[in-house]
Amino acid sequence: MKIALIMENSQAAKNAVVERALRNVVEPMGHEVVNFGMYGPDDEVQLTYVQIGILAAVLLNGKMADYVITGCGTGEGAMLACNSFPGVICGHVEDALDAYTFAQINDGNAIAIPFAKGFGWGGDLNLQYIFEKLFSEPSGQGYPRERAVPEQRNKRILDGVKGVTFRPLAEILPALERDLVCGALAGKAFRAALPSCRDEALKKVISSILA
Image 1 (cartoon, one colour):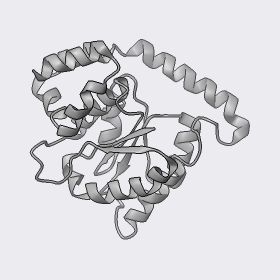
Image 2: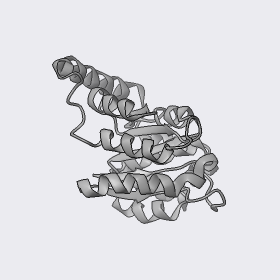
Image 3: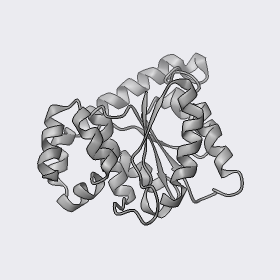
């Protein structure tokens, strides 16, 4: 699994802490981590939580990442922005129990963590516990297990609803403010990943916007 890490501007200073906790947990599991920044508060590329949603949606819809780890001060803005786009099911995760139940019940592909609210002494350990429970076993198995069948059915219903209520991302991006999209996709890590985009229509639109 390729896991993307995205940080927004108010919490960019914690990038190294989050990346270290994530890599320490998931790389021994055989997963790959790609850090899409922000890497620090003074980065040339500044990402708002709205732009996190754009970048996360592009990475997931283009199959350039299988999972997105992100957040903001409270985690709420990043979650709302991610869920504003097709192909993204983002949960708000504050602790290991949130992580496990979201993975097993909701079977999403992104989480938004509060990197300021409640992030004090032991914050790095909390991140580690979150990542351990998020990726400890295959997602979507249900919790408790006897609830697996209705929970999986509800997930399929949600996917179907999102398929009706959202347009394809390739149609959405050109309708957004160009500077907003360009800013979200301006990072070097994204430029390096773009050739691997598996959605040719989406890749063509992005290339046109960034040209």
